[in-house]
Image (cartoon, rainbow, N blue to C red; front, side, top):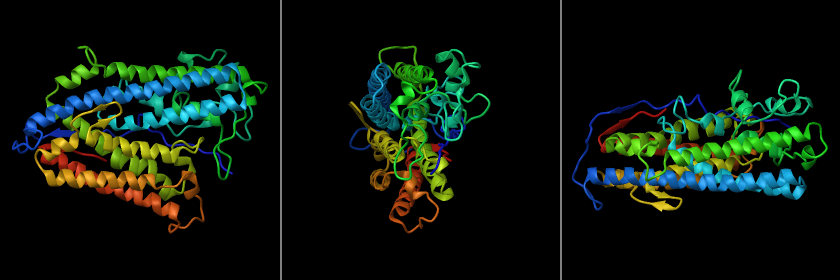
Length: 394
């Protein structure tokens, strides 16, 4: 039996420091796709188009989730709750890919305006939102005296207020409201549909869930707008106006930081090493393994230039223009890391329990995934250096 929290992705992230060592460095000999500078410029353009396409896909599936949640709240039953949960799982996969667009102070994690902490912060102290085992009156939902009106302004104001685990918005707040605490030894949380009919503060709980879903959708749509083509006053326009080498440095920094510091480190190794169910990501739904796979595929997506609904030259094409050997090595390594992470059996938390030996296939598969992600990161850095760029990743 266990109540669980996840680790925060939001504001604590260590943004990689980046130093340009040459504005147009590297061998300009060119490969099959053109000169080094031409391929870099084309890959930057394709990245901007791909980011918009990926965020558009994420917003589309979040829109479907929002509709399913509205249908559940209009008629709370086991069936409508199951549909809302499935819609969350579907939308979560699309969002996971987009985390490869982080870690360089872009629109999502701009220090002043970025909504990442409102979208995907963790770990979440679930008692901050609603009741938990042993505390039936815990949370914003059950405190009408302090919070008489639950609306977007309130939930935004309360997110991370007084502590970084005080998460009131985003994927994991919605996840908790759909599944509840994971108190099962071999399955996800089992919040009943009656929490939204005749349980204490059912109406307030429903209002909270609906508002949180609307907020998430609003934040995702804001990212779509930030990367939308055919406008000259958004982040995409600023990004494409950069020297292509500076833009490429941001792109590679994002995937490098996600590869080792965030995915291999914070999201996998911390939980693995500490055997901490508090440190798995989508803990309430037991969706953590799918989260990890989506993140790993996001790195591959940026490298290959094969985005949802858009394709073009990727980082690998740019690297191949100056060093085909490094490009092929990285292509093989990222394929291996995606395969390794995909091999981790669900649910993730079953591999964290005390008494499960490191030789257990589940724990061994997590370690293999960590090692594969760590192995590809120096090659990502080497690819940048081959292009005459220098990145530092944690």
